[in-house]
Length: 136
Image (cartoon, rainbow, N blue to C red; front, side, top):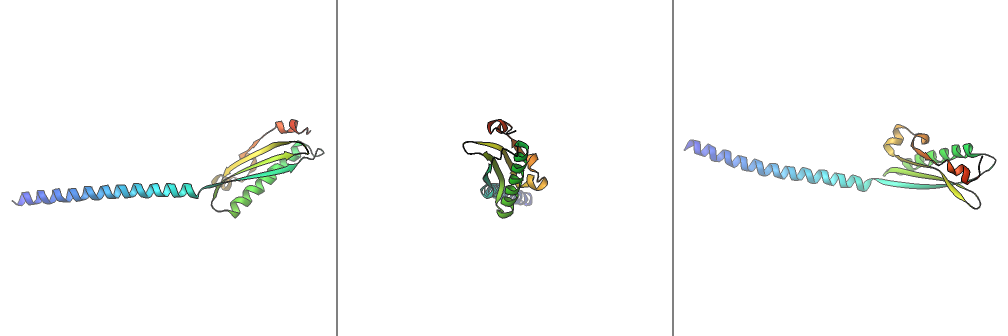
């Protein structure tokens, strides 16, 4: 009878452990899911559009350097002032009287920017802007 009692006790403990294990597993999954949802809700992307007036005397190279400087400032200012922003997209457009064309677009995450705050690394350039805007 003693063996039967131990077997029954062991069976009872096993059932309780399995039940507790299921509850813990479900709780862990629910917690991780909630954290993933919360972090995706908190992550924000900010888009910044900048217009840069074309100065024919300066040329395309100078205009591109100005666009990089403006983009760098916009990214840094956005990350500094808005702690919930995780990604920034900056579009710099050359603007003249009757036309406009994108010079560069910079898309960067906060983590990337902290590791390398260089607009040249993260920017996509549009060299056709030179022709479209009639720049030298």
